[in-house]
Image 1 (cartoon, rainbow, N blue to C red):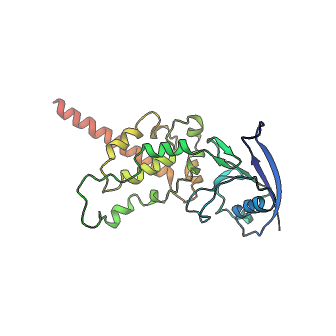
Image 2: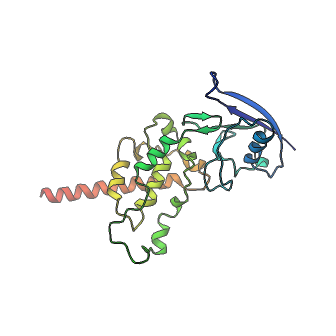
Image 3: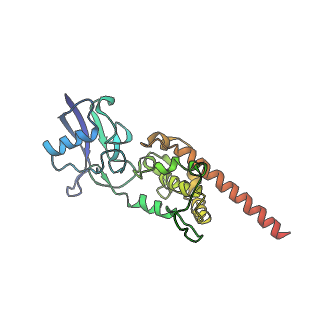
Length: 243
């Protein structure tokens, strides 16, 4: 069947603003948007630029705006979309070319929350064990694939690019609630800054945009609660010392 696409194009080599390209390709209803983009690049216009890798919703590299929503091109079926299918780069990130955005700032914020296990106890002989209950506490946020869909769907991020953004906070959540980790204080210090978790306005765009079904807004709320608990505990300890 014929599939009508409307793709936002931008080339840094050309001294002109972004434009729209209308293309019609042959595809099946059960094909994915990624398949349609491959058809454009392989059969119509080889200059089209976009990212993709695993094509199975795991790597997160083909996140883009499809009919006005942040999605993974490898997961969205053509039969579920109205035509023309409008495809744009994610908003809020600098566009490198066509559907490719510069995510260096995104990953800088990711690195700020210390996104790895920090264990200060001596290494065990085999592994650091956890109970199923301990693992379940942060299981949801382990699903993040760093596609950026939640962050670029966030109005707080649009208003202030210094904001850490939902994805970085999700990564912090994953380790803050890990019973084996010992870097809670340094992560909370970053999250408590003016660009940290308090800029979230609980709009739920991030949860709606997540292609992995993570309850991002809930995770951010839990980080806020942990910070409030940490503040109260610190104040109580300070008061005891003052006495």
